Length: 298
Ligand SMILES: [Zn+2]
Image (tube, rainbow, N blue to C red; front, side):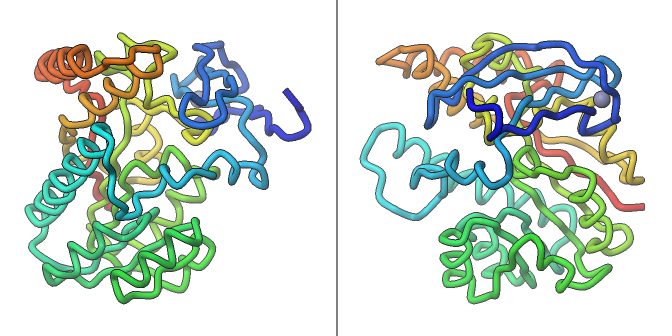
């Protein structure tokens, strides 16, 4: 490992403690096959990747067309499953928000190619988006007809501007957690709803697949939250957790990838059983493979 290219995290990104324990070693199964360590903060329990690639190096770990949800045709079985789940997810994400507030102003941070924003706009929402990847951002601008901004331009959106701010599987990618939540706090109207979707390593599939669990997704995922650590982070900024919702399809998709990462050439049956088991066990514990958290600004 060329250490010059890596950034060693010296204090916990959540609580600042300098005492960590090694949690596990996993690999970038998706792209580079490179190994990364995940550490656990002894103080607050947050799991985080350490070391991580330096900001100027991280781009190469996203250097795959597969990572961005461009609307290309997928002919592989996994691609078809992915697209079907994506469309179902799109509607259920939208329904979840429309139930909180029928319409209003929405900011999607890390909007990718803008599918969710487009869907919301069609349903009467005033939309804004932020996306760091240039090809995804350009695509999102085109398909939404809005000027999608870079993260560093977010202040242009104005303080107290949004009824709803969403981050769908995005917060775990953001380098400066505290700065990100502070920005959300500024942009959100008083009483706004903040919707955060994250993988949950406390899920059955997270525990079953251990280092092969696909949602570690190192080094792109810098943090690995659970119900406790995400709540600690948001409560530091005065946000209150309202409720959380399961993302049941993720259990199947993540199990499928995890089976593949274990070397299983025919992952379908096993992934189906693992996904069913994960969702069944989570009925009591709420430890679904992925969770959507609804926080409110005070
Ligand atoms: Zn900590």
